Image 1: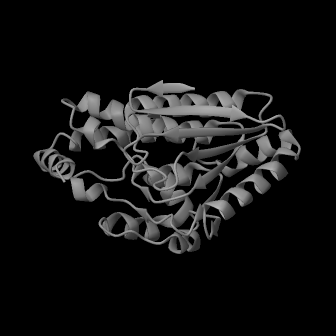
Image 2: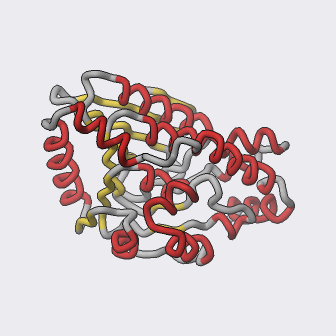
Image 3: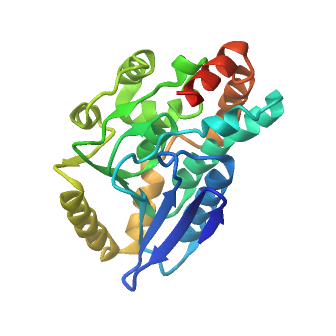
Amino acid sequence: MSTTDKGSVSCSITTNGIARVSFYHPAQNSLPSSLLANLADEILKAGDNEGVNVIVLQSLGERTFCAGASFEELLQIKDKEAGARFFFGFAKVINACRTCKKIIIGRVQGKAVGGGVGLAAAADYCLATEAAAIKLSELTIGIGPFVISPVVSRKIGVSAFSHLSICATEFLPSQWAKEKGLYNEVHQDITALDTAVATLAEKLASYNPAALTALKATLWEGTENWNELLAQRAAISGELVLSQFTQQALNSFLKR
């Protein structure tokens, strides 16, 4: 387990090769840079582990899956280089999911906001509950969903991504996310979700590992330039976060 003052990332592996990579943060599972780095590392380590056949990516708790970036940390950014480094933390997690050799199952038990939507999109197959509404709220604080746009658009298409990005104050229901292709399955509650995740993981863990690795590579064809692309997108967000608009918006949000 990798632990920070506020939050943790852990990985557990079953005897049949199912790895569960879990993250937690008390502020609605938001992700400061330390957790982003640890999360990327755990995904890559599980992918390189010959004893792992499939990975489940999940957060802990029964409510929010992931609230995205840590607003408290965003307020500490004082120059565009630091801003780019912070946002590239999300890029590292997306790229870890992309280059990881194992199929990743996303388990989304509750709302996903901003970077949380990006995490769901980075999974190869994503299951959610009916409570797992989604929102891209970046425009409301003066930035945009630039780093996650390639991975989200890849799943739901440009039109749906435009809707999600522009309607930045609106939570869209889990069924909308399923219809657009972000979620592959939507279940009534966490109990049903966990049953479905376990069933799928056990099936995948029993399949030919070489076939799963080949399928993984096929699913991500055409994304070979994402290291550079996402770094460019992180630089855009890193500069915008310094704007007066964003600093005021973040302060207002944290005072609520």
